[in-house]
Image (cartoon, rainbow, N blue to C red):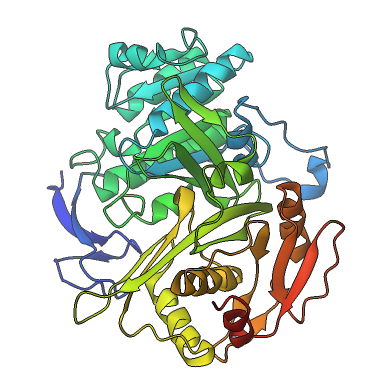
Length: 453
């Protein structure tokens, strides 16, 4: 019998090395090598006992073209929307997020609603006892008493009970607490996470139940464990939001059965998570008109336009080096926009502290919001409020020019639905919309002059 030994595996690319090093030879990442104990078989079945698969190869033409796989709807409209219409039988979904963000509550609500719809579920909790899960279920609006709960971390026991109950959806909370006896090492290490996820994937593909996994995240915001975990599963969802805010955002970054980059918005309450029917209005809730430094823009999150408020404050610096603070916006992009506004718009920021905030916990990742950020900065510098019924859309180049943006008709259509009547766009945009006054902006100099005191 071979003696167990250890190897060092990269958590980013999965490359294996015999000894620890600061830098991975496979992908070049630093401090990603972690020790992994290898057991007698390394998690693989003995080759001499391997048997051929019972499903022979077939031609795609012999499978037929049906209307598509029937999905199980959870009844949580935003969750189903992000998944592409519901849970696909035999799929594996990974839900990651910060501690306390509401991952377990979201999946327990899904299990309760599926049971009420006649879909058999099994909720496996490796971090809480069944009694503790019941305490959390008692706070939910919908009764979760029909859900089967299993307090177990051993993978073999989980798969045994899933087959014995003949469930259709299995919830595993979390994959980092699950382990198999075929591998050495504690739960949560690279080998255990990868092997458990692979076996749960085979359970889903071979016997049909959908598997939803909860994944912990690292301090950098990524899913803890090997990067291959995200490659194994069919769908990767991130649950985001500030603990001090009521809104939570469910974002799809990978989806084999639907569109990526879709988001769902939930409101956290004492009775659980409630889908937000009108996310665009939710992000603008509490907006105060008549205040300088506030501008509204329209984001495209997948196929959904969202209106968000950008707040900017420029104040005289009390230190030698001015501060540049950005929340919801990349600070490097803010530095570029400030340089363009100072050079092309004639507004000096060398002695001003600049603070930019995107309300509601939203993030600006597309350049179409540049014009709104600069409009908020111009408004703050001159202490002159922008029109309350105006929306700003445009990408700003280094030459100060304002460029058109994609999907402008859909963005403006949502703005009109929310009551906006003016839109500041690039002069090259050719858009006409009933009930909307389109105002062309040639460049940053034009914008600065328009809103100067």
